[in-house]
Amino acid sequence: MKWLGKLAAVFALLGGVCALLVAGMTLWSVIGRNLFASPVRGDVELSQIGIALAIALCLPWCQLRRGNIIVDFFTQAAPERVNGALDRFGALLLAVMLGLLAWRTGMGAAAVDEAGEQTMILGLPMWWAYAILAPGLALTAVIAVAQAVKK
Image (cartoon, rainbow, N blue to C red; front, side, top):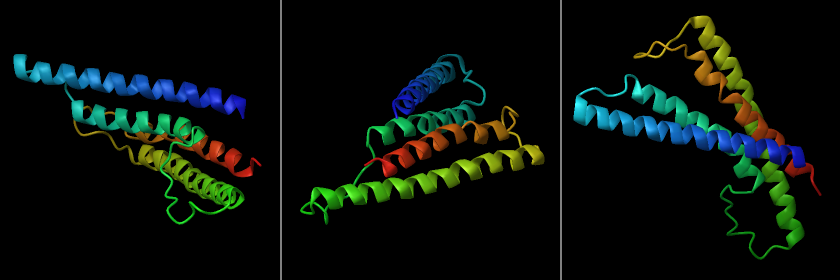
């Protein structure tokens, strides 16, 4: 599981860099719009894609650190063994869901590529906007499986 932690950390750092780049581009666009009547062309498209990527890249780290919200109102008083079993079951459900999302995102990328879809302003191919999300989703699924089988 150690290599998963290192990979999740790299993904999270890349996600943080991506979010910072989006923030910088947004700042540049707002300044350009207000001072020079010249915003960054396609800033909304780039922001949407960039933040989606940042989130997908940070998901594995969040799962590794068990940073997802857990509603334990009904299980607070349950024995640790029961809570552990429920946590493992929840991790397994999350793994299935994110595995399906990664698979369908990859398939969606192929379908969008085949259709030749592009963004409206910049004319960027839409397939890569889908494809770049799949690795983060897949790594999160792998980490969740590792947590589900860990005793």
